[in-house]
Image (cartoon, rainbow, N blue to C red; front, side, top):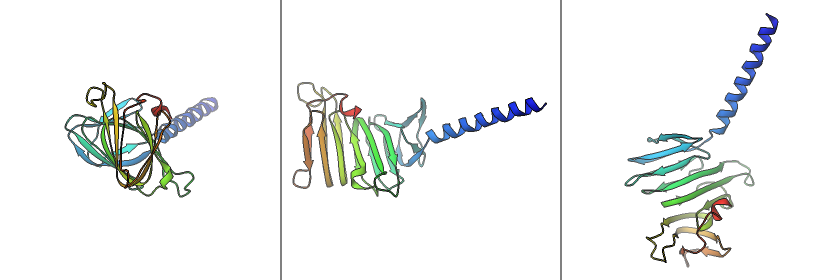
Length: 200
């Protein structure tokens, strides 16, 4: 009887630890404050259709269908607006009073979006695209990832970046640095499109 009780206790500990581990993986980073038509979230292989005020999670892929859109408001008041046929991955979000630990990393692979930074330190933000990595400095930016065949440049894809407020530092996949400010608010990058930037 005593051995059975010990076994039940051991199993219970593993169940609790497993539940804690699963819960720790699903970290809420914000919620969907606007949802138009069909917007999906993919997290750990589970696909769901987002509804208004649904939470979104660290490492979740958010995707909009044609004629759909969404806006996500993060816990630091950063906002991300996705237009039709767009796809981003919320790679990392750390909201920490220690500026050296705060971090926001996002990967955009297709479509159009608008990003307005929130309360995290300026250097905490990084946006990866197929052509460049974007660091923002208290900024509102608009990004369009133009598929091959629509860019008009020898069938290559292109990434268009427009700063409407603040500044952005762009590092292309080929290592070129571009500073975007009010004096040079836009850039179009069509060379070096590939996976290299997305792996940084």
